[in-house]
Image 1: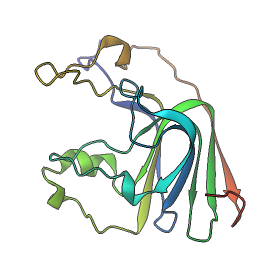
Image 2: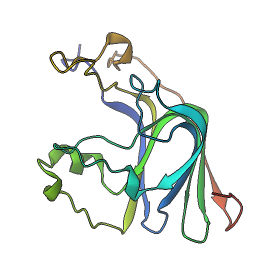
Image 3: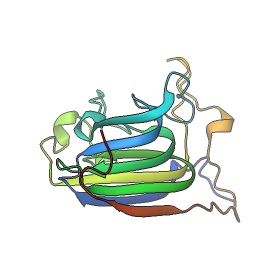
Image 4: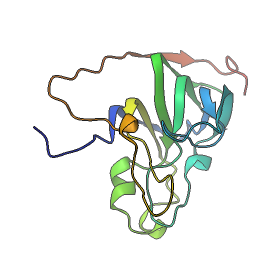
Length: 170
């Protein structure tokens, strides 16, 4: 029995070269949205810069997530890059910081805000909700928790496909 009530996320995280700083995705957007905060985000094909995904919250934290993503492309200035396809809708993000950097920073000034050498990609099969229906009870509803039950298996696949310049129109 775990003393942890909920896992923050279950998925993959990897780093790309910083030049792949344009993102395009089929999922909810255009603003950040999470499993319990997505009713104002509509499904469509969206595009944005990776740098625009960082939200400078007073206390650095998870930001820039996209819910119900079916595919996401990260492209360079010429339009070449990688397309990520999922076998099921996922929670996805692309930003300049690793989650650990966001979690350990106390202020925005603690983050390397001028970092341009990498893009950190997250593709999560399940993601803990944000909670905070009201400021006096910042609790995540049970249906948006990810309980660490023994024997639970999450299966998913992510296919990577190279994209040639001009193959996807932004």
